[in-house]
Image (cartoon, rainbow, N blue to C red; front, side, top):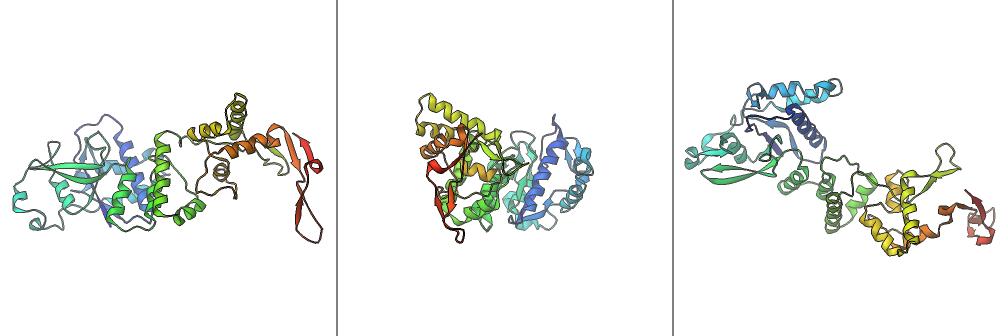
Length: 354
């Protein structure tokens, strides 16, 4: 199990909103604990009791007392949890000095940016992960270094904004089922993402190499600014909520369909249009339907995620509904006694101008 040690070796002053920084880190820790797949202990080790730990002029206890105080009722249960987190102190309570320090280390100078870091050294020896408030650039690092007689000693450091890196370290140190799924889940930084059950089921079925490839694609898309804010795509019409027999324009998707027709009129090839949509991060039709809650399956799709292709562009350009004609009665039963249907020729279709 992974245990966090709260790093109170912090700068003396902070000009920002300390309570907000603390609240955000604690909320993220609660989210980690709620993920039952992660082997994380439900307490945070400290070097002393919260009432005596000073953080930029405030005690740790006062930060806990003021946790989301402006929304007191909403976060009442979370505040109770925080009191239970910081109950394991001091860090050397169950540690025998001779088991942790060598004779040389007993007389060593142990520093972190000029400040005594004996507690961090003990946490490192106990294989705890550091938890640091991201108050400056020295703390916003994946690996925090302390100097032991001028020799750098590195330790995993979590500051709330590097959760993906934290998950990768946990996977290296512990056994986790569906490890790549956990990495994917925490690959989107501070953005809130919901991964639907159908995607997770499909993701678990593919090979680890392909899973890593999918994760890398999401990472590239995130880095390129293609994922947030979320974007829609082609399905310009949908069933009307008020009357399921009617159709109405999907305003999110309509823009992209108009772009397709405009680019085509400007002389762009179908493949160039598809490439441009992919570069812009526009969801392909099948993925858009799933993202909007449509229970959709297609025989055309052969991969976990869809991309725009020249064929998809052709389908849109040739679909009469996009220029105002709805085709009905495309097939009919051969006989009322059987369910077998036959496709009707174009001249027999019912056309409705919309």
